[in-house]
Image (cartoon, rainbow, N blue to C red; front, side, top):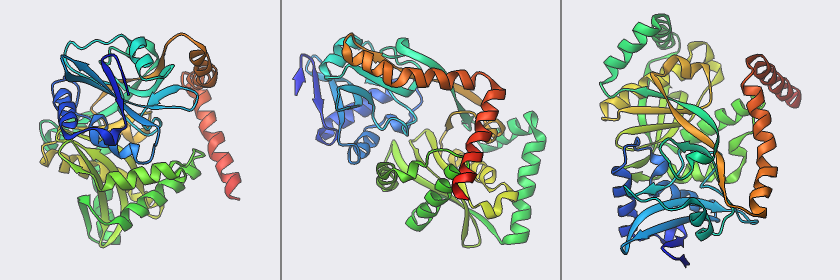
Length: 361
């Protein structure tokens, strides 16, 4: 369907010319080439999210922008695969500046909700309710330069982690690392570890949601220059002890689902895995690992910097906007209240873990 200079398509309806134009526009921006912002991610998501759509903006008869989104049954819009997509927003030609309300109207949505909107998204950043940090590892100058940064900033962390890697090799078997593993059995093991971690910490198990597991399966088979599913594995002998599944472009490794076998927890295999991922990424010419938003001790230990991402919703006047506010804002404000108070946040985390233990007993 079309509305003025905007045409709305299902992602799979995009022609190769439109997909290539999307890639060209993305390459022309100053933003990191995050694979979540590539057409391949939206096409894979559409296979498991039937309400996924792409708004194609035209100027002079040529595509000048793309907005991936989903339309809810009541007309609320949201970023495609909201909740698991780690980078969101529109891909626009330089100088393209559609009016936000008109774009939402052309998409037949009353709102556009986001939780990992990238910085520089002028269409939507003014509507952000919260700013968050996404933690990054810079390996642009190579892995040795990254190790030097860690050694200068936190020498004990690096020394201890490398010592644990050596101890793991002595006590359990030869340690080896595979950056791009293709064995589906290891992906299943990773999902199992991650599900157990979610339950152990009282968090919602993402892999219990069928569409997320199916999305990961699809992306594991995706091989494109700017969006390749990548399963990285730390082995002891032939036994996987830690693994990570994420997406990589030519310049960014988007870290997504890391987990490890709890039997080997004393060796910190997850930290060792991330160091080896950084080393392999640098060798591939990748300049940045994006660890995602949300505080975590391991991110604080590994990061070299932070980028801003945003959470909120652009709305246009009407009942739909009010419905969005009622459905999301009270919970968002409550979460923000807790996050801003470390003692309260720590209490909430302990409560979640306690509830998880009760459910298992």
